[in-house]
Length: 255
Image (tube, rainbow, N blue to C red):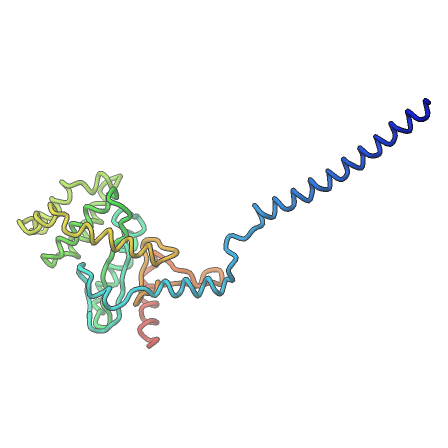
C-alpha cells in the first residue's frame, strides 16, 4: 500500500514537472512574440526608396500661382521663374541668425537679376508671439517698407530676453512710427487683422504638404536646399553665406 502511495506521488511530481516545463516554454515563446511586436516592429514598413520618392514629390509643392499670389514684398526679378523662398519665424533664434549672417549679406551683393527672393512665415497658431509682427510686416509692405520693417523686427528681438517682451503692440507701433508708416492705412490694416487669415492659411499649407519642416528653410522653386550629411541629402536650415551662394549658383547653372 505504501509503495502504491509513493508511486502516485511520483507520477504527480513527474506530471507537474512536465506541466511546468510546458508552461515555461509557452511563456518564453509568448515573450518573444510580445517583444517582437512591441519593440522590433519597424516604424515604417515601406521601402526607403519609396519613402524618399514620396517625400521628394511632396517637397515640390510650390508653383507659379503660389508665388504670384503672395502678398509679401520680394527682391529681384520676378519674371525669371527662379523663386527663392525663405521660410522663417520671428520668434526663432536660428531664423534671426540666418537673416543677419546669410540673407542680409546675400541681398547686399545686389546680384538678384536672375532670381526672385521673398520671405514667408510659419506661424503655427493665433497664440504665437510671432503673429503680431508678421501681420505688421504685411501691412508695412503696403508702403513698400517690408524689408525695413522685417529688419526692425529681428532687431527688436535682440533687445529683449523674451519674444513676448519684444513683440508687444507698443513696440510694433514704435517701429512703424520710426519708419514713418504709422498712418491711417497701417492702423486700419492692423486693427482689422487684414492678413491674419492669410498668414495662418499659408502656414497650414506648408504643414500639410511637407513631412519634415522647420525654420529657417529655403526653397528653390519648391525644393528645399539640402546638404550631403552622413551620406544622405538632408534639408538644412541656417547655412553660412558661402554655402548659400554656392547652392544658389549650382541651382542656376543646372538648367
